Length: 415
Image (cartoon, rainbow, N blue to C red; front, side, top):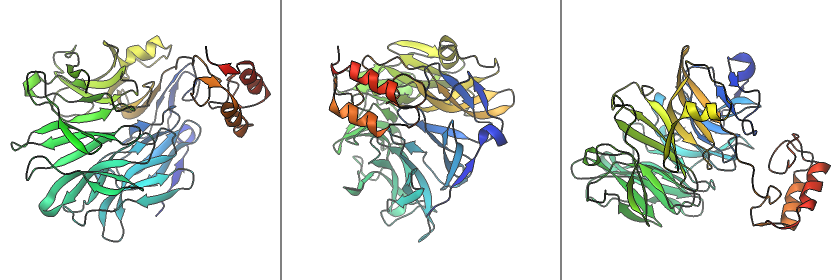
């Protein structure tokens, strides 16, 4: 099953770029995607590839190529869930229609080949929906989401090629569950568990075992929406029991509230992402009422709350004064590429904010093992002549002799 169409947004559509660089370069950049109805949802670890959906189907984006539409059935077109992308940017998780039964099903799209692989279903459906994709692990091997059972009972699921499609069950008889996100290797999955009252309580499954999240005084909190790559940090929605404060949680610390709203008219906190190390949490404040873009986007960084527009300004990225990054939906593993939907004078548009990344302490350590050695040399040589990437140590846009010289001069343990 394959449906792929490339749109050169830079040419055919109005692509606004603040700062004349492509995504991922050190000076940072900001893109408005121009076409109406685009919802960027997730980004690769380096921010170079973004996945999302529009009012009918799913897509991925790069600064060089623009939008590539990949088919599927979006949440705005009778589908459900969202788009996810692996950290290396090779696989997109999305929801499609299975032509064998005309029901929705989760699927992986391989960017290199343009092929789509469906994950299967539990043999039940609720109306036209059988399975939907809500998240993809960082390594791209695990998909999580919601699968329907008999009499429209929903169940969280996990899927991998090695383990197949697994029903993650429910701890409250007759009530539904859903998985929203997975950590890098798929061992820690987060989402919600319906209580007998119908309240969706935050839930964490570690190696298949469920834990429900409460405040330190025993009040149930709302659904968990994101988990760090190492699985240590989980973030989610508040509830009436904690004044609708967003929260973060780890096994070591337990429940920790996120800051109360800085804007009294936007009382509720909606965390949507957490960096691999847990130091950066993407969120927005809004009312519980529409429109979805009626709020304001923020980043929590080691205890400090900053508007996304302030982060852009501090990075030297000049935005039009009418742009408000109101609905941030996802970010890269390091928290430096932020994607979502913005309010602008010309209407609602998808945005990609790519903040400058700190220079690595040991840039020639391409495999991150703490030393520069044969494995790094092999990685650089395999990228020889290619475009900018981790092997482009001098930042000139290609991997060549100067990069080899820089790697050899750094040979040995990183200091």
